[in-house]
Image 1 (cartoon, rainbow, N blue to C red):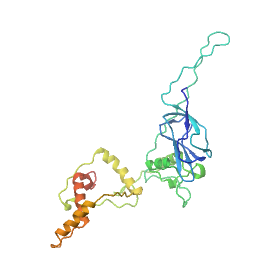
Image 2 (image 1 turned 90 degrees about the vertical axis):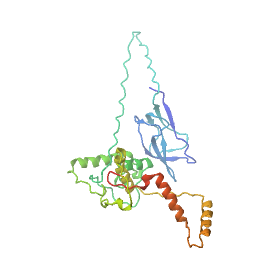
Image 3 (image 1 turned 30 degrees about the horizontal axis):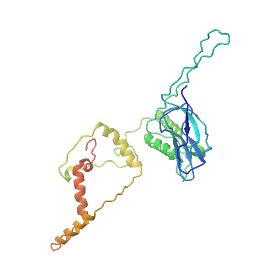
Image 4 (image 1 turned 180 degrees about the horizontal axis):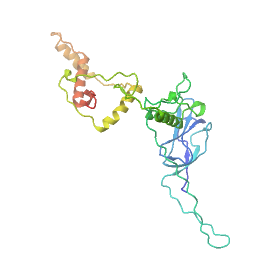
Amino acid sequence: MGIPMEIRVPDIGDFKNVAVIELLAQAGDTIRAEQSLLTLESDKASIEIPSPAAGVLKSLSVKLGDKVSQGDVIGWMEPAGATVPSPAVAPAASGAPVSAAPAPAAPAPAPVASPAPVPASVATPAPPAASDRPPHASPSVRKFARELGVPLAQVSGTGTKGRITERDVQAYVQQALAARAGAPAAAPSPAGGAFPGLLAWPQVDFAKFGSVERKALSRIKKISGANLHRNWVVIPHVTNHDEADITELELFRVQMNKEHEKSGVKFTMLAFLIKACVAALKKFPEFNASLDGDEL
């Protein structure tokens, strides 16, 4: 066996005696560096404890409900690439040489295939009873569900206090795929996409805005386009604000207004914003494009 390595709780700030609410791995699992092993929950936040290195998890010394603090040992692992010394053969009591039988190798954990995203048209398992509370899941589980297209509100949690785990999400997907296998072939998706209720994509004559240039989408853009469109529809949007120093620009605007005061021309900040946008769109023409089928 390789040299075992302690897994300790890293720096988690001022939190002490934080409860373990979710175990994200088990003994025998092959884990990656920085892969989450367990989830802690304080009064203020949920904290995922990552693996310090890649290797095989030998054991976790904590269970659900245990409380830990920074520096506590929570398990042991065998790092990847650890040297495996040859086992010493003990001399036989009778003095006759006896060849030691090799210990049976532990079967490697079977890799878990990531299930395909669940299409909206697939018959899904019956959702749990309606509740006003949001689904109870850690950030890593929420990300895992988003990648598979699984609505957490329809997943029944088996963790502590109904918490949803990765295994719950995988079980949901497996049930959905089993239901799909026994269901009749689905009708073709409407022109609006795979989401019900979306309007058909409008047919626009872009030439009415002026001369246009058509470019075929690359293979990567065709493949990623459906996922990006899905994310645009289902993920909340975030608006980013930034600040810019326009002191000199404002002085220039005031000066221009004074010079053109007699002619009745007045410069507002909008004119300068439009000029900046035009310059940016000329430099990055794809921001000035529209999607039309498989073309820009």
